[in-house]
Length: 347
Image (cartoon, rainbow, N blue to C red; front, side, top):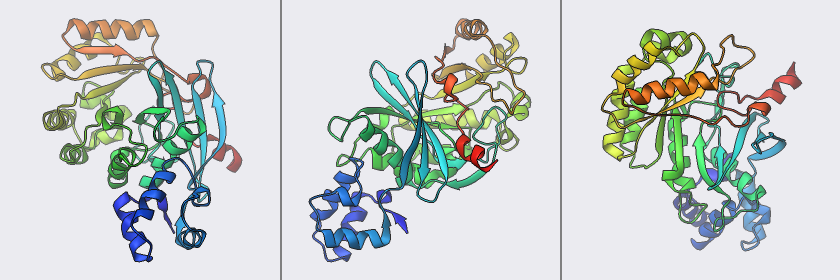
């Protein structure tokens, strides 16, 4: 069975016509699904039509089964998918509104040494509708709808590598941006990747306006190979060249994520090499004191050291800042998301 939230308005129109229903039914369904409703909750379509759709389509692909709230107000959601798989997501509260961190895969196969999401490998990709439903259920939980939505920003930084699930992620961006639906601006969407070069180049030609965020985490290929297996396939030069292509095609500034790890990538020499690498490129360096994962032996730096590293980069002519850490006490910070409850239950 297919997930009905996977369907665009055009695809729903084709479906309605194939089932001898008027075309306008598609907009009714699309609008209501984007309010976070199930088919049974849609009051303006015939019951017989709803029953027909339910025979072929899943309409409730994601359920929130647990919520943890951190001392800073960050909320971490445990979602159960229709097939029993588990993913996590994080809601961050800012002055301008709520940012939701969504997952794109169950697990991850990239194997980054600092990340909890990849500990059990890749289970499966999420469909575009499953990614979308994370936004819809939380928006509804907060009392939002498509007109007065509560979710204003989305970061594709949960479990999974978004560009390893390319087609579903691109379709999700178009679905969540649809004027007839929740209509979140593409400029308010950040897509984080560990650096899949061909997919970055492909994304540059999709006519999208999302913010590209690249998990760089090292100034040299030698250091990067120690913590990111993808470095054995794509060099830093290839990644930076792809990032420049994305900037030139879209006009959107690229952000490089850099998790400061004690004794690995935090020296003044690392800062100097990084400045040489990115000199003249209007990118931004987002420094993150490593959020430690208990299964890994990598250690974080102090925030003082992080600010010193940022100051060094700034003096060398780069735009750099230290990211505010949120949700660390509930394992909701960057790199900490996992299917923890599922792991505990199966232990």
